[in-house]
Length: 403
Image (tube, one colour):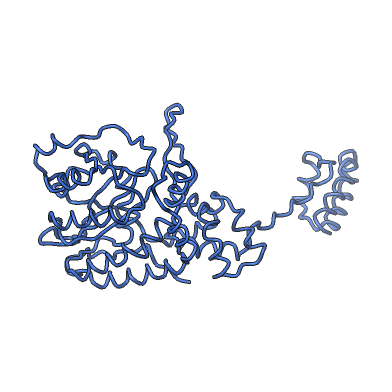
């Protein structure tokens, strides 16, 4: 007798048992125990307890089948690793952009392709939760700064307001040191410049932070930008707050300003790119040889530049709204720097900039192959690190791309 039959049997004899005398109750109880297989004490509790519900038992709800197949999750995980571990919102935004190369590399079925394009950012977070646990912890670091002359600080305008630029021509600039555990001697720096409006970023490695090295890097970055540079904002380090950089800006008609001391939020755009574009890839090892600087520039000038500016979408903060005691941040839809530049060209704001060549270059490049080449070059760069003056704690590299 199954559970449903026992319940129907109990419902049939319950009222008869409650109305019977002592002798009849013993007969009914013996019969109930023999037929149902219940223990006698348990059967007495059932018959003397509250009556069973006469309503029919609800059928068990069938568990909903998985909406996204294992193939969708496997391709999504490989795409997440190849894209450099972006957040779910950015990964959801780059899926349509990378889809042509996903079809060529993974050969998904029609249902799998539909699942990839339909999955939401919240579902991506849930399905990739186990993979995210296997990614190494992040350890944040900063750039060593030295004091600059107070006279120059008074001559260079101080920017205290938030960026309200609507044109892709004003940028923030900073240096990221690769000194390892020791700040002595000469070592490599990454000069990072990011456009405030579009997020377009250019990076160059230099050995030391001397005048000529900084100026050469700025000159090369200005020539590589797809739009004219009209303004830069730096921190208070002596590598930027000097007469040479000021003269270079005046010669090229570039507006030069600096942020407030000890206020990293004034340079929030470049501080974010210092992590995503430099520190996340290079780690905290020490690089102090011309060979290491040349290997870093070989990556910065080619694959990494294309991969980040053409294929990596980013969300931009639009406004902050206070709701009670909480501050809610509102972001726009994630887009790549190239897409933001193309939007400006469509509105005829960037009439003098030719972006057709960059659009054709994106169509010709395979982001998965770019990711593989970046990982290969990073391994060569890691081999050039000064191991004796690098952190002894195992440096977890976040770019381990395997297919």
